[in-house]
Image 1 (cartoon, rainbow over the protein chains, first blue to last red):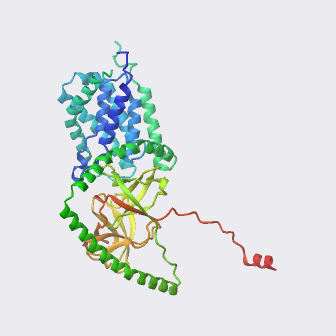
Image 2 (image 1 turned 30 degrees about the horizontal axis):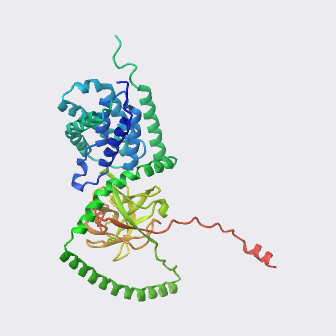
Image 3 (image 1 turned 45 degrees about the vertical axis):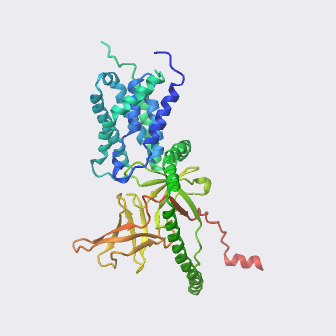
Amino acid sequence: MSQHSPGGIMIIMGTFIIALMLSQIPLPIFLEWWRPEFVALFVIYWIMALPQRFGVGFAWLIGLMLDVLKGSELGINAIAITTIAFITLLMHRKMRMYPLWQQAFVVFLLIVVNQFIFYWFQAVTGTTAGNFTFLIPAVISALMWPWVFVMLRSIRRTFKIS
Amino acid sequence: MKPIFRGGLPRLSFILLIIIALGLLVSDYRGDSVRPVRSVLSVLLTPIQWLVDIPTKIADDISMVLLERTALIKDNNQLRSSSIILERKVQQMTVLRAENIRLRELLNASARVDDKVLLTELIGVNPDPFQHQVILNKGSEDGVFVGQPVLDAGGVMGQVVEVSLYTNRTMLVTDGRHALPVEVVRNGMRAIALGNGNHGELDVTHVPDNADIREGDVLVSSALGGRFPYGYPLAKVVYVLRDPSRKFMIVKAKPLARLNNSRYVLMVGEKPKPEPIVEIVSPIQSLEEGS
């Protein structure tokens, strides 16, 4: 485990660039609430898989980038993503043992935390949020989790990132 | 027994990172002190926005290539006829403009200058459903500034809220935080059009119960806020409710700009120059100097 593949970090950053792009792709208006939180999903996966390499610092930087892309006040996404990264770090051993559907449920709860933090800060800084529609992405993200998991695992295995 | 996680967990760094993020958040909310950080990061992330835009561009190109000849001819004819109509209007315009200038001179009003226009392409949409923002491909390099009005062929789209080197972020008029002073073309009644966070709808607020406003009225920017030039169309009134139990009427308007599917937009106006400092010379002093 101590031997890190040198290209590994580039591959991980590559997956995050893809996640950031996915979070930016324009969707039609009726689908705008149905966008999975790809960046958060990828953070959860990489922390679960490689907790010794991918920590809260990384998550924080990724969150900051998301803030810039989303145009939210700097730091909101950083706080949300770092928090769920920390929770994942707390329970990554348990999560690895779970079957996929159970992992998906944990992911649902994590994304709920993420959404609550994000929209709570958004509301404090002046954007109106009336109802609970902002929890739809948590459901969609949980449904997406098995695919994200399998895809990232195959990437990790192909490039032997450890 | 020692718990498994003790020691391995970066509790301290987690708390530190959260505190730093909170600091950034507060200073971003309160002022401009972190604007440099944001603009550096957004220049770094601009390639991502370009990459995201590539599929749309390619799709556009492909549909251009695949356009049928008959459709092209039809389009062309349509454009030609509309251009003739517009040209006729422009012919009248020159006369009208001259007349307008003459009348304004008679009234001693300041002459209206043509606005400078910059053609811009839309390269992204803010994914956050609560924020109606788009990303345009002109930045401070091209002279874009915060507060600059953005229009499309239909009317006012919004204003610039954030500028980086090569891109800018424009808040649309339907964003819940946007407000625009307007007036009714028919009678010059002033009002304020607020975005309410719904696509394709604006609230016209604080219209007194006896005001003369009807469905179908066109609202234009009134230039009272000092940001938008006078007279660009913003919206058409689609709903008026006169309810005696309320102090104000409920008025809804529909934006005339195609906020969701305009790809080419115009940015008007020039960065306001700081007022030159003029030394005030009292008449007595100037008399003394003259003698």
